[in-house]
Length: 293
Image (cartoon, rainbow, N blue to C red; front, side, top):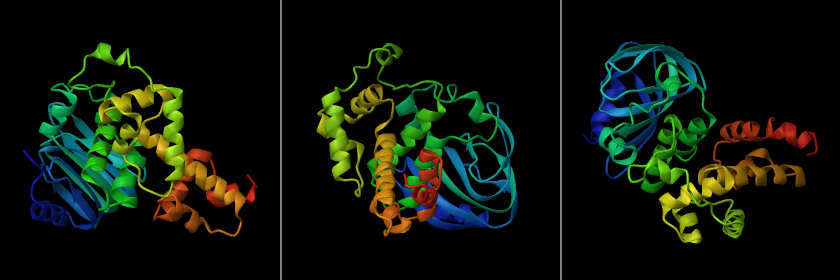
């Protein structure tokens, strides 16, 4: 069943005391992401036929969900992530909370990850809240930093990347497990060409489709072969290059502001840029500059 029409989604969110800051759903209505700030709530939460991934951005609260496959009683604090199984009844309580939420329609999950996707969800993500840098960064990029301004392809790729991270092993409905043991990495020359391409467009949005076209392979095979060659997904690679450029700029030009540097690599929100920078380099942008790195 596709994700419900926008007015129904908004009505359900509003009934929970949510103020929707941004909202986006792809044309096929299989993937949705929204940024919402919730007022005080205590009671039931709506049942929706989709897998939900919630990232607590600020505030916090308590969530309880119980089905035959999932039993959750968890506290959520900033940075915590939780998943809620499709059509799961539950209840929640929070004084105030801001979340980025991603929903993926059930049929889309079956088509992309196979009929056993639910069984293959990692045990450590279905029983409690958890932290995951890749999931957090991806959801913040498409649901906050670039909210409402990503293409259907980017939104779909982000959803697939997040779900892959939650599964116990890489999987594709058209491939056998043996295929993954024999992925042919991209050549060093191709990876170098991609790195140069990214470096020349560091201030722009760079899609996986673009990079796959540069390598001359399909998007699906490109992602697997790129990770086999570099150890990173294309998204992780691009974001790392952007942050590396920001670090260089901060060291080279003491007159440029941190805000200007963050905007020069595509971050509209300086706080989110600082968080990503700290995750990569272990210190805040201003601390990096003061140390003279």
